[in-house]
Length: 113
Length: 116
Image (cartoon, rainbow over all chains, first blue to last red; front, side, top):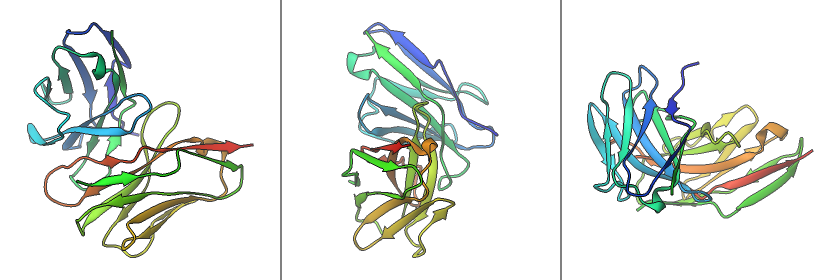
């Protein structure tokens, strides 16, 4: 069964460093998403991506964040100059169309020290 | 802004019994989707069931069913014949229909414990 794949599963980075989280969406899906879940809190929408550009973004998705689809398979989230409060589980998701089911990856746990 | 509220931080049920998880939401939209996602200890979010707001009939997926009350903005999940594998965090989520690729708005979750 096709699935969304995220790497790495756990990333530790020093405060102020840049980090790139990687995702491989399901191959025939056209919409891609990033969410984050701070430990013990709810899952929060960050950004959606379609046709090589951002479709929607939340107020959390400020200038320190960026997304990119560098090739035909990967979808990345870059966090510039990480802060302690960026420590969270980051989930990538993809859907075939805008109103169809979103499939989630297993997440990347980001720890900023 | 849309909000989703899950008032039960934790629920416990005996194996084989039935449990209902509550969810209410607030929106000014008339067309939207509602979802229940399951997050087991593996942390992956798994879709359990989905409801389109324009459909009056409650969605059902095997042992999982919803009670969708649009006027009351209520969307509860009923799990029948609970199994040990149902133990997980359950998140209620909302998404507007149409327009751009808006993300899901999640509730804070309900931790479901299954007692053997």
